[in-house]
Length: 205
Image 1 (cartoon, helix red, strand yellow):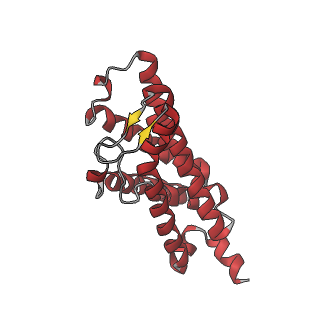
Image 2: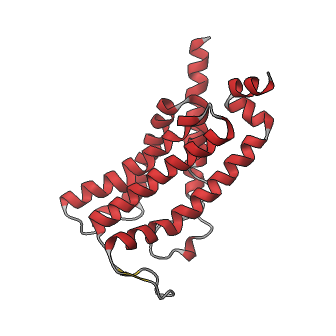
């Protein structure tokens, strides 16, 4: 029985990872962010859901694999090693823009037994940590200032405001969209029972 549960959990993890990868490639608002970053079709949600169902430990395992994929994609598609970064900057970029940024998504299940509020709090916390990781990279690796988008008059006077606005432009909508879908999923009894049966039984007693 335990072996079957372990196999089922591994299969679920593989499916959620694959779904997250596919969704990360769907970027309907890419043209709105021509200088980097992308708003995906809730690509982080499958990993958040897996963490909510199986706990932070398992969630971190899957999110780390997702982080590795993002790093490989950044290397192959975006030409990470051709950006002219020094060795130290490159290591920091790999850590804060890829490995740490995407691995923290697995923390979404930290409040999974607290009902809807716990689901929302976990998802928001995990995604804000990803946002913070990108901001740190923007401040200490790229340290950009000035105009972020040519179409707007906004000028970032320092590297902190530049990084916050730049990364917030895609992360804030992504967080909002992910939370909205999380709430919708929680409202469906069958899905809630599937993800957290103990919580449902407690509510029905």
